[in-house]
Length: 445
Image 1 (tube, one colour):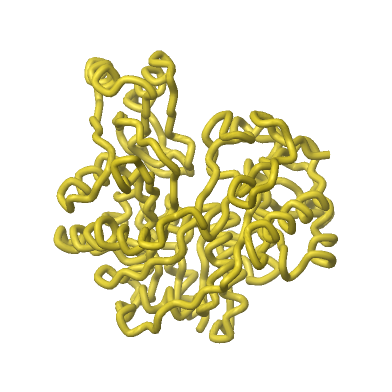
Image 2: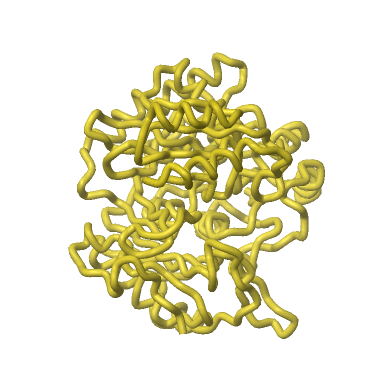
């Protein structure tokens, strides 16, 4: 099987790594990729948002499968362009990807499918914003209706902060994140959901739904869940504290009903359906849907998956998931720690050299390894930072304690001037203290 992966972050590096280990994959390509992906796949300088260019590349490579990683190309219709060329593609249509591209649309789908979620208001004016904030009270939850690269959500006790964010969401002209077209001026204001959060992925061909193992990610920038929201600073799997029946419950009340509703609407969802969940005192509630693998949860979920990945994704792309044998998983655990650039999640500094990658490969592999996100090679061939989240250091072990220790040992080998990482990823479940005072980011030498 010849496979083309679209994207250039740590999620795509995780996908490419797993695909490169699949004996059925005879050729692996990625567009545009990054410095780490280049070690396992041939890179192509194609704009991932240009559906025609992606489809032309896939046809020229005679790809047997195209895997679209990020949300922006999916919302822009890249998967549609590839399907129109008769090439199997893992990723939903633009219409189905609205499940992530518009939170208002997702709320409408959930209401129709009786999926449990937070009560909410979709607001387009200052008066509607004030009424919604008054109706729910603190803590206030305000979401940008469109794509925002994981940073469009504000949770605050301060009504003025909430109101300012909501007004920014409804004030066009406003271009969505990651280079997509304007998504319109709407804010979604909803009730606060108490309880721990869980990420659950499911692979679907639009009819059959196959859940993966749950994971938990860490959205806040600093230890102790302090600081602003980010795209994700770390993750772990499995969740020893979760109800063993959680996956079955979410399948029955969330994932299958959502897939069935989209098919009923004539927009079948084929690809990866990601449910962000809150385990509240009133039961499971959906926080949000994503239309693709999440980052950094993908890093830990794929680290535990032992079923070859290409066959699973191809089955979803070709409508044959029902015939696939049950998925196989390792008995161990996985932990990912994200190393971010100086000043992330605000405007990050880039171009800083990254050292220590070879040390991790030599001393910690295969139990620990580095997945690249925002990296590139400079004119001299050295790997330098090229984005906000730069690296995902991933480790496996017999349990979360072992995986966590390996991950942080590998993190300590890496040097990136001014960078930061959280030191408390999986600390509570591994019953180990964080290495830094809560509320601070660990500075990188």
